[in-house]
Length: 189
Length: 162
Image 1 (cartoon, rainbow over the protein chains, first blue to last red):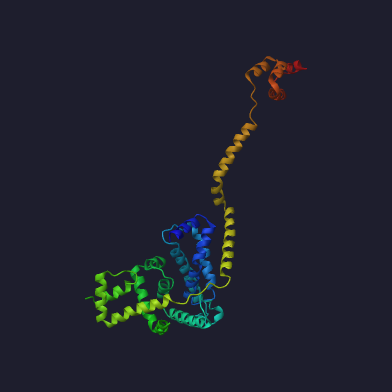
Image 2: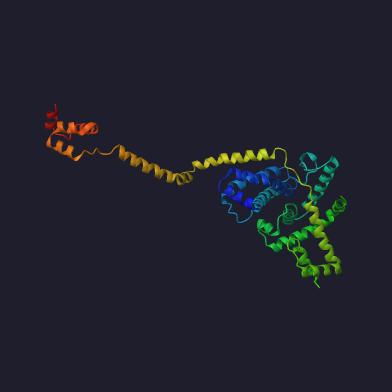
């Protein structure tokens, strides 16, 4: 973390290499966040890149009050919110995509069966996410998929800690009936 | 023993806070007695474990190259900041001050009023142009000629040098 703090300070001071290193460290996480929260929208890559472009434009203003990753996630959430807002105004049905071509390659799988199983599991989880209210979806993704701490999520979303806790609690309660069949399968793996 | 409300509150927060020995014991005691809270605790743990193990995407092929190109384009656009006159003037002010000081100083050195020595000035004033020329040396000669050219020496003195 100290290393990243140093990189962020150097990037804020104008170091191109430092910013590029930070991009390299965070691009997968941010891409994943965007993909999940936009339900695999075809614009996910563009939105993820937009996050880094905005981070680049604003890096001189980054003061290190929060971790760089937290700051970056806040930018990503704002980019996603704007996109979802525009998408709601468009009279087009957009939902989780099922075809493999746009699914995104899953890393580290030994076989085609593993790939198929992983895709199925991920689709089930993402479909379940899509049923959650937006406020709960973002929080549970930030916590359980992105691995952020509660206080970081509270900072990113501008919410009290207690609100974050209760929304994540309720989100998990809602997801159980949709996902518990996966748990049985996972526990047998 | 804990109430269900207290237990629920602890379940909500237990994933980021560590229960002390006493708190943990009281929670275990309650969960043994209360199937509803026990199910809630299990739900939180089960769903979290599932989501943490959600198969992760890899970056799409070419993502890094496209992102790098986009950031390079931003860096290129950053040069347009140079034609922002405010940015331009603030950034160059110190350099401009130094350059100006140098120009003024250099100019004074280059175009300094020729200074004749006291003795040469006296000779000129007395009309001894020829003696002044002999005494002045190469540099002084140039100054003398300039003085003559500028008409600072009387016509009578110029005639005397011929």
